[in-house]
Image (cartoon, rainbow, N blue to C red; front, top):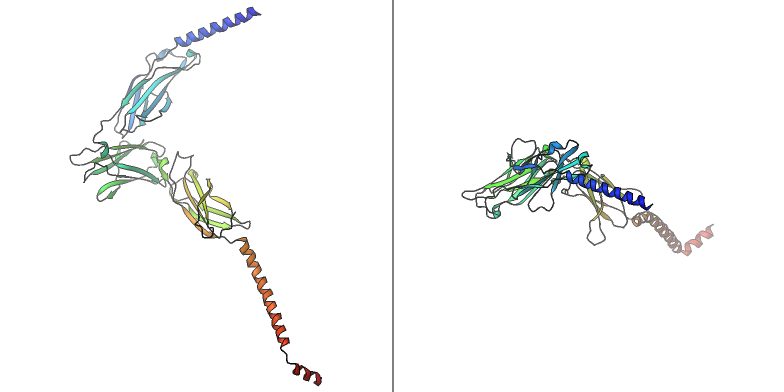
Length: 380
């Protein structure tokens, strides 16, 4: 029995050594000639590399690449697994672009164990002009109703008088970067831009640059990469109606907002306010949902209540979004005591009237003259 144990242990040890030797012998080199080039698309850079020199020797294995990229200062790398040798990805050109690639080998030639090569690295930085304080401030964009993008900014702290700003944009599908043709101005200075017809840019990187020019002064451009669905702000919900059922429940119904906002991409928040005598009404959130109807059980005895509803893009269509403005409806709710009192009032009035009549009759009988009554008796 001990002999068989020693024999099996020896076989396992030999097999482990052979597998280790086989995996050590199977190695793969990293990709070659990693390059980053700027095609002039406002931050969308072309990343390209060549296969490792010995890739043809691995006929029984699959060769893939792990491509990661980020801007300097970002905490996490964005990761892509691919068999391609070229990618175009978006960066913030105001910071250094960093990329790295490694080869992944797996198949019969590696005993179905994934073998990874060393990383190769590359960086890219555009020459920055002007001081940081000359860059525009408070750059902000909202995609209204999935119809138009409104971007606004303020002049940089070191921007001189008479500065001229221009907004340029690009997304996959355009041959070249284009300039905004509908600016928002303040005292003759461009402080914003309206971009229409961007449906083809949805769910893609939208690269934007706001550049400034002034006489004898270099201004630093601002670069941004946007995702329109994450900037969407719908209009307020429409046709908000409130009704009271016989079971003292409040039924709230509304319609999706107009515009090009996909109805299936919306979620709604419902809030209720109830007056408590002289106390100021306090809004309380009662539901966040995708349906356009909600039933509220009336718990307290408030006379006047208000309901308001707002919407935003849900998690199935975007990572984030802006809430719409509120749609509000106030209504009157009668209390149960009021209904009971309404029923009792006619009864009380009727009984009071009857009591008054009987009292008047009694008073009249008491006031009848005795002599008149005796005279009538004699006559009979």
